[in-house]
Image (tube, rainbow, N blue to C red; front, side, top):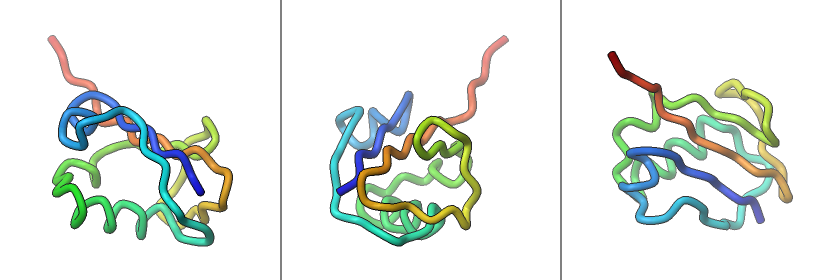
Length: 77
């Protein structure tokens, strides 16, 4: 099981800030692809990803017990 945290518009699209899913040994890229199809999160490819509070690359392997956070880019003026 992994915890997945969503922020800003991603949280609004999913309908909650945290979900727990069954996953082990998948890449960040695969997880993003799954959420793109499951929740239609079009902006997830632009979001920064952190695994256990450290920024992660698309090839980072996610293990059971990890916490993954998707942080969309911030804009402002």
